[in-house]
Image (cartoon, rainbow, N blue to C red; front, side, top):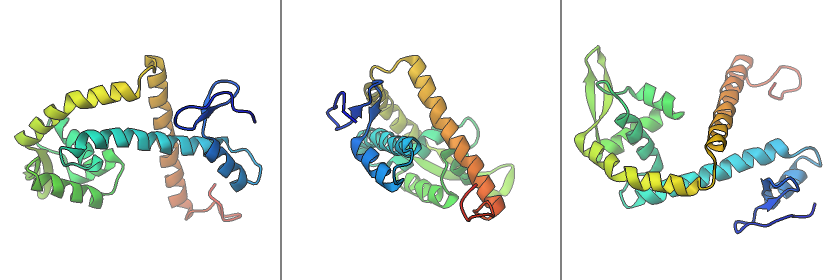
Amino acid sequence: MKDVHKSSTGFARDPDGTFFDPGARTAMARFTDGDDTLALEAATAVRTAFHAVERIRAHGARGRGLSSGALDILMRLSASTGDGVSIGDLAQSAGVSSRNVTGLVDTLERDGLARRVPDRHDRRSVLAQITPAGREWIESFRRPTQAAMAAIFRDFTPAELGRLRHLCLRLAENQHRLSLHLDQTGGTDGTDGTPA
């Protein structure tokens, strides 16, 4: 297939004007032995976009000493309006394990940006809570982050951003349903050993 246009990142455009990654397309065509590659190319594009956004976030947080995971948890804590957030709720909202969140809260606590407090509704539980220093950190990070996100999404229309958000969350919803199905079926559909 003839490339209509090559970008500075090495991406090319299909005849309809949509971007594709020639290297990914070639690899996926070999992997599928000539079958349709569109879903696999889309998955690769999602991963590429995720890494692009994470690189921008990490660049902004680098001088401030937080990993992107710790930054995500701190931002979630800053949005909390109650007494704090449980580790389980943080893990669920961030889509990571409770063990991962525990380590991230440890880091934030060590840096004075978060603290653990007793849950006044359940004496056996503790909550993570942002500290005043954590709120100051978020305030100093807010403007550079907004500028970086505006730059990375430059020339996207509001409709495109809304559609992108919808498609990404739809993908996450499909993955969640598939995980539930695989958990219920032991990881296979029971006929040929492949996920249903």
